[in-house]
Structure formats: C-alpha cells, structure tokens
Picture 1 (cartoon, rainbow, N blue to C red):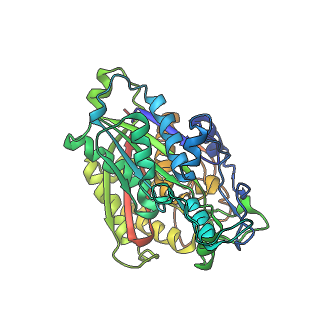
Picture 2: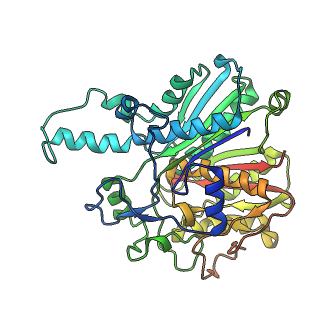
Length: 403
C-alpha cells in the first residue's frame, strides 16, 4: 500500500480520521445535506463534503454524490502515492459499492413522477443512466486519470470495499496491472433507503442521542447507523514500490472471500462462514493464529451480526483471541465503503502501533466473550485482520502487516 485517501465523517485526511478514532469520538449526527424528514430515522454518518476543489461545476452536475466521493478519495490516494511516470496501460481501477448512484435514482424517480415543487411528470434526465450506474465511480476515476488497465466494479454489499482491495491485489499477482487504485464508496443517505433499512429493523432508533447510537459489541446495541464516505488505496508490488523509492505504508499479506449460503440478510448464528474466511485469509498469508495482534471487526452494532462475528472469532482463536475494535461507533456503517475505510484504519493501527477504542462501548455483553478495546492501547507484534461481512452472506477478510 503506497497511497491512502479518505472522505469520511471524520474529514478527508488520515490524520483527522485517526485522531477521531483514537479519541473514540462519535461523529454521527442528524443528516443535513438532504431532507430526511420523510424517513423514520433522520441521523447518520454524514460527510462535510464539497467536491468542487477537485471537480468542476459541470463534473459535479454530471455525477452522483457516490461517484464524487470515490473520485475525491482516489485523488487523495494517488497524490499520497506520488506515483509518477507510470504506464497508464498498466494502471487498473477497482471500485466497490453496494448501491451506486442512489441520490440520482431518488431524484430521477421523483422527477419522473412529478413529485415536488415544479415537478413535471414523465420528465427524465438524459444522463440518468450513466450517472446512476454503479460503475460510474470506477469509470470516472479511470477517465479522469487516463488509466487504461482493467476497470472493475464490485457490488457485494458491505463487503464491497474489502473485496475491491483484495481483488486489486490479485490483479497485481496475476500480472494484469502494475498499479491498482482500489476504492470503496457509498452515498446511501437518502430518505427512501434510510426508511427501507428502518423498516427492516436494521437501524438504531436512538433518535434522542444519535452520537450514542452506534455501539458495536455493547450489551445495549440496537442496530447500525447508516453512513456515507469513501476510502481509496494505491496498491503496487513490493519490488516495484521499492524500486521507485515509494513510502510503503503496509503490506496486504492475506486475502480471502467466501459466502455463507445461509440467509438473505442474517449471518449463521455460529458465524461459520466468517470463521472459515478468517482462517482462509491467514492460510493465504502463510500465518498462524498466534501471528495476529488485532482484529478490526466488522462490528455493525446490530444484535445478530455482532453475536455471530464474536462466535466466529472465539471459535477460531479460542481463549487466546486478540483484542477487537470496530470503528463504526465513530463513523457509522458506510456499506460499500466500510471495508476500505476499515482497511485504512488497520494500516494506521500498524503505523501508529496503537489500537483505537470502540466508541460507545460501555457495557460488555457477557454472551460475546471478546476482548473489546474500550480505551486506546498499544499494538503488540503481529498482523492486523480486517473483517467485512455483508447482506447476502458475502465475507471478505484482509490481513495487513508492517513492511
């Protein structure tokens, strides 16, 4: 990993992101950039985000917020990598997103139905399809920089960001690219998506105190907090990065993906798919359980997900399970961006040699049996495992090590 880029509720730099994680400071608040008065839940992890320093007014008009997030995060990562004089035919782009252009879809549907002030029924934006399509982010990044290598979009719900990074590494290993920009992005803060998740009883209902709503692994967790954002990473093969004198921020040493094949939204209670995926990732890395210093958990703050993940970790590691953190108490759950955002949190954990706490973790759940980090602590020697598990049963696990 030679470049990192972020757009999060904690800002657009690794420094502000890390400071918020270490402080355990929740950034969840009432959503302001759109009208969510029609939704039964009106709070989330919202980014204070303006793409105009990077995108022109015309580009903003012709792109969905999800695409804007992806492009800006990628811009930050590319600048951080400082990879100049590269063969553009050998640069790949891989973007993970759960939904694609939701704001465009929401606006287009309202426009077509004539809903709202000045609405004209039957009217449609001629650029609706290329703006709303899920691959708008990957194609937008590639076109902006002239990257002519493989350009892929992965949609595996909440595992998409992690899958984007893992599949990017496979492009490098198979020789299909020399540099890959991997991104996870999501802009799901729309009234109808928030209402849909609320109808499924997936969201926290702590409207009286939004900042305390996301509380992974806590006994009193009651649902996740939906969020937006993007995270981007530049991947290169280690010898290539060393040859150009790049700063190698971490190495991705293991990756695995599988599926539960169990239920549309619920994980198996024993977490068997997640357990197997963690083991496969460690096997892929050539490591053993004792090599793991920390698990950056998926930890959504829903009763069933956290219980299943805890079961999987306990089953795999036994009594020697490493300390566990979920960053979703700080930034919420950004669906397709979550895995990439948590990958960067894992890399920063390795860089700073410090484990950030799980925000809002106040009352341990005795049924989980995990060492959940409640205050910052030193990171021991070893690798960091980053988990991502998704609706549909998709599992993805990344293993990061210091260079």
